[in-house]
Image: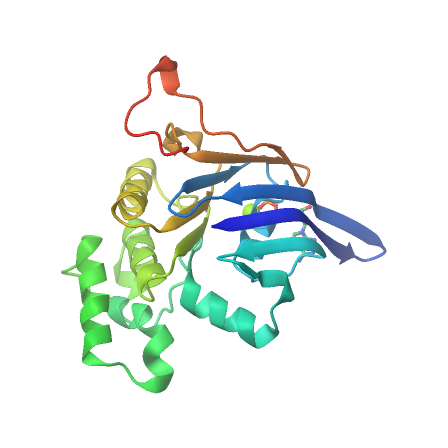
Length: 238
Ligand SMILES: Nc1ncnc2c1ncn2[C@@H]1O[C@H](COP(=O)(O)OP(=O)(O)O)[C@@H](O)[C@H]1O
Ligand SMILES: [Mg+2]
């Protein structure tokens, strides 16, 4: 459960102040598939990164599982990011001189990787269809395959929520379809909350939460309208 209460985020840009978020309030239930949509520069990434405690709001509260992220110390925010959130980025952000499986094991490298952690990383790669690519470096993988490694990486700590910033922005439409198939399966097979920034509304389904942002303000946070008046699948809007 994520409660965003009157969140503002301002940046100083030379003599000017840019208000990227101007009082955003929303509520994302556990296990939901939530989309953040809106024009370029409207504050989508800023909102996503405040949910991930990457950015601290200028004002307002973000309460996740009963704890206010904005009241946490730096150290507490680091733990939250490392243990409770999985991140997926537009440009994959894999480390180029590490293999697929090593990229997933990064959080465990400082303390030494256990057999159980390695087995889990391999299982996560198999689940995204990369069982035969575990030891490939990023440059030996297609964009879609790299993003699948990134999805496996986002899951390795079994976080309660996965945040994705335009995860298909650099992919062809076929690879994009595959990425959403995997994300959808993740959301349906667990109680993981997914929050995904996208330009591409064709992946939104009835029952998803759609956070429409414009100039730093939410236009509406209603469930998606059922396409053609027919609801397909379960309505999880509760
Ligand atoms: N670090 C920053 N410093 C100054 N301005 C920023 C910074 N990050 C974002 N902004 C500004 O905040 C606004 C929202 O940015 P962003 O959240 O990245 O938009 P979106 O993801 O919707 O394209 C934009 O006007 C952008 O230029
Ligand atoms: Mg963005």
